[in-house]
Length: 246
Image (cartoon, rainbow, N blue to C red; front, side):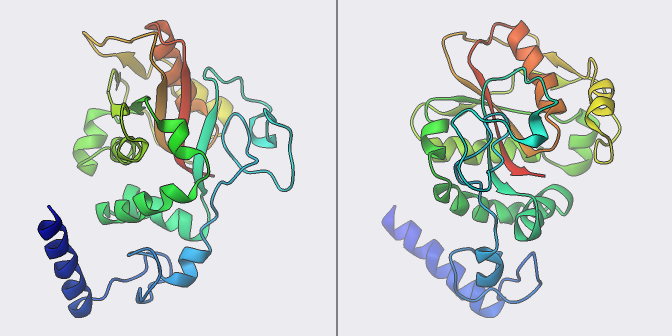
């Protein structure tokens, strides 16, 4: 195993010498730093969601905040889940990572996603022992994209969470809804009505902790719609986790 890891590391170094990696945010060469697809300057600019954070969405507060506080983004939201955590704010270099993964088939940036996870205080404990449920794409959208980015992120989170954490997909998307990008919370909620359903033969264990996983937390409407399906199936301990917020 050590020889295999050493060989992969040598191969990667040799490849970088011939084809230096390019920063997905600024387009410059990536030389040094702790990430392979963000240059050191852009890496330093990633806005990590460190505590204190909103109890519902994980957005960090400016300054101190009592435990359980809710941010201005979530005051109009009635969450169907318990707690929410996120990893980065969707601006600058953080946005570049998410957009590269979601819109440009850049699966290689998952390497940087994994490298960023240990920098989020308490994240490993939050994930440990959980069943991670990625928000599903409609089959047409998944065929078009070639993968579900939320499932990819859930797999990264599960590997980081260690023993007991695993990915399951008990829900499916049954309505091919229009893009949500430009919609407000109320319109998103209407757009997502009856969009998700429980898979046949899917089993929910009420004794387990479930984490709904999505790429981005925007209004919480998608996560709420999925949470309702899981709760109706018997899930009683449900939280959410996203990579980005914005």
